[in-house]
Amino acid sequence: MNENLLIKDLMDFIDRSKNAYFATENLKNSLLDNGFIELKKDESWDLMFDEKYFYTNNDSSILAFTTPKNKVNFRFQIVGSHSDSPGFRIKPIHEKKIKGDYIRIDTEVYGGPIVSTWFDRPLSASGRVVLKSDNPLKPKVKLIDYDKDLMIIPNQCIHMNRELNNGYKYNYSIDTLPIMGMSEKDSENYLLKNISEILEVSADDILDFDLYLYPREKSTLLGLNDEFISAPRLDNLAMAHASYRSFVESFSQEAVNVFFVSDNEEVGSMSIQGADSTMLSDSILRISKALGFTDDEYFEALGRSFMISADQAHAVHPNLTFNSDDLNYPIINHGPVIKYAANKAYTSDGLSASIFRQIAEKAGMPIQVFTNRSDKRGGSTIGPISQSHINILSLDIGNPILAMHSIRELGGVKDHYYLYEILKEFYNL
Image (cartoon, rainbow, N blue to C red; front, side, top):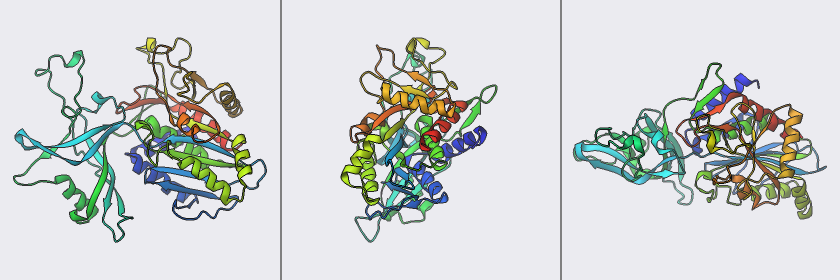
């Protein structure tokens, strides 16, 4: 896939993936279109060599893999990313009325968004709705996307808060609740009634939901030469997209190639669909067993395996260069970034980084490095969490972006293409 087609495909994927549920559904449908066989977590896995499989977990994470043609030098080649992004989740009991009969939606912050960027923008809601079924242990699940300008979080006017531009500490129980409309007399449950109409079900059949706000503006290219991508959820759907495209366009004769997208990284990964679960470790063990390998052969394979944790990196900010390390700072469109941290918030070390450097060199693509300033505490990724469950050599990489965790983030067109080519090289080993 050439650079232009890849970037158009990325923007389309982001715009259709309003949250982790839709990202997983879109990846699932694409895998089916590419001839992958769907497995179920609660069913036996009868696997064959030289075949393609996937399964989803709790509707918001996905793991796909291809099996090699033979048993020689059996190993796993894994690229992991995540499907969630910071934002706002709608609470179960969620409608509040106030002076003037405004309908406000009660929300809670998910992850660590730059909250100010969510104000005064058209917002909508999407996610999953859980419905009654004949089996209480297996309720029905339907995805829903309002796909309209539904809500807005209005700012306080400057005349009522003269200190607004001098820095303002937001109260998440007061300041960030969106307005959805005006109420009618003696009426309630507007959102649930509307959901039942959209899904064509009885409101009494709705048991619960997981709904999240999202911005309505589409992804776009900008810059004199269209060199930048401005989009919501670049962190981390861009990494999921680059690893997916490289995965479906590659094949290894000897390795099980694994494409893994977990959920809930932004809140610590502690869920059954998160990287701090046994999802990845259980999966590769089941694959090994189903292909007929012994326990010893499985552990030998781990010693030959390699994992790439793909999560976006911090580009140096042109207006605030002093916030970056003096030497180890990446620039947009200068290549993917190897991320280092002495406290092991990233898994990269001299050995794993050297492996990645050689893969990038073989692909003919540039790379950069990143460390935090020594007096600043950075974030982490699914890399260290996953590595704590599986004894596999790993490193952390990502593409440099600006405004990470803003409602709109800024990345580079060339970086996305560079990483796609490097990951293809990796998956073809």
